[in-house]
Image (cartoon, rainbow, N blue to C red; front, side):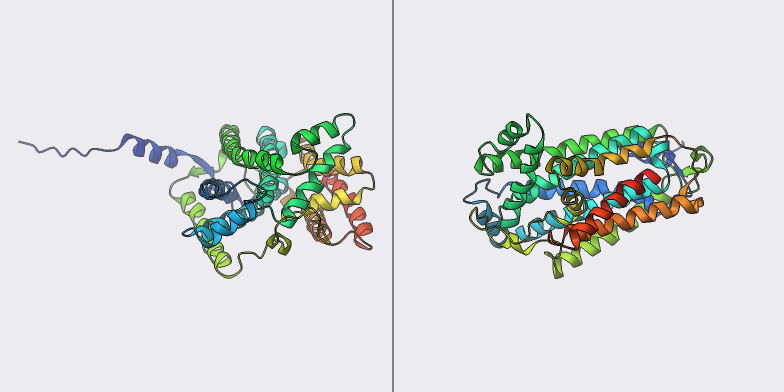
Length: 366
């Protein structure tokens, strides 16, 4: 009699494996195409660490600062969770800015308009979540940063004051404001996870682009195992780098003013947001008009949608003029970040105004 060996296989695992093996991916893509995967992993890290921190955080103007200290000193591995969450926000923006820059360089906005639009929405939602999260420790820079940024809403004609008062829940940044920001900071990342799924669904039909700018339907291969290894390698590298930063200099990207509890009677000498907002903050300061500054700051993000306009320009990799425009744009954005970290005084104000003009003109040139 013949013997038959029956091996029970998990249908879900088999389906996942087959879908990964059969997923067509352009074979010419570089490590710059790994940013989406890394952003997904970082978002999961932020949600998990944020959930753990919320279990011990107290959303009270009297206890918020002390509760953060309690998490750092008294909770088992609380300092690891807090530093992972704090530096994870910076990591998320670094990866996102690289992801956006790669898309601009390889003409993704024109080829994948719907995907690009959803990406800009994700960027705006991420900025909102990061801003509200920065307020929660209730340090000096957190409090005054929230006061300055939310006060800009009053520049909106007719409804500005009412919207600002509704957002504050009071006549100034206070307890109701902290309650609102804590709730929204908890909810927006969940919405981000849903938006990321929409982003992937929109990408699924046209598929990923490639560095050569050719039709991606003619240079594809299976995702597994080649590109899975290519995704895992930078992930392990980033894990090592995060471990080093958290172990040696976890507050490197923070502001020393936030080591002081919030005080309405003492104003910091120089109020500034986190580093990933500095380029937009510099554009805000460059416009003398309050309303004009707010409009310019919002336009600095929304202008990315202009890149979806159809043109006959070739891939920037093969166009020296477009490549030069791209690197001018990147250089201007970095210089604006530096300007935003400096005080509002000469020559930084005039330099910021010149760079603001270069910022918008370079985007239009691209």
